[in-house]
Amino acid sequence: MNTMSCRGYTARVEYDERDDIFVGRVLGLRSIISFHGKTVTELKREFASAMRDYLADCEEQGVAPERPASGKLLIRVPPEVHRRALIRAQAMGKSLNQWATEALERAARADG
Image (cartoon, rainbow, N blue to C red; front, side, top):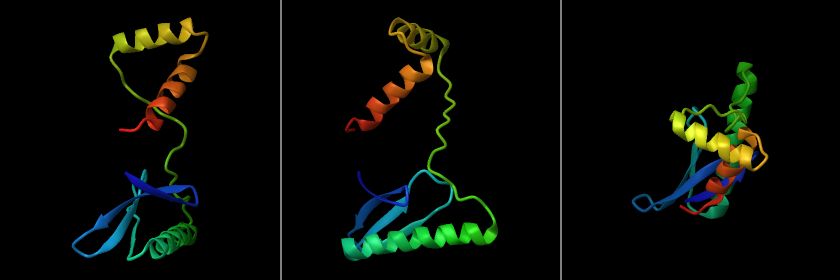
């Protein structure tokens, strides 16, 4: 997956062969923010412009802009997985939160 970042936001970038342009879409938000350009330079400029417009719209409407992640994650897992993870974390001298954060970090960095 090809990505690019601007102002703390990340976008997925794809090439649209039919229209001969690069198309980007900001990830991790409910709001749909997309942009496009014929060159990488134009794509970067349009991404920055889209983010400026989004942030200005939020300010104008008096709402906080969405952030891709708050740092809080609630997941549901089978009790047996929960038990094994808790035992593994405690055996390593860590809290379940600390252990899970490290596991998620490793998985998020993995190619896949």
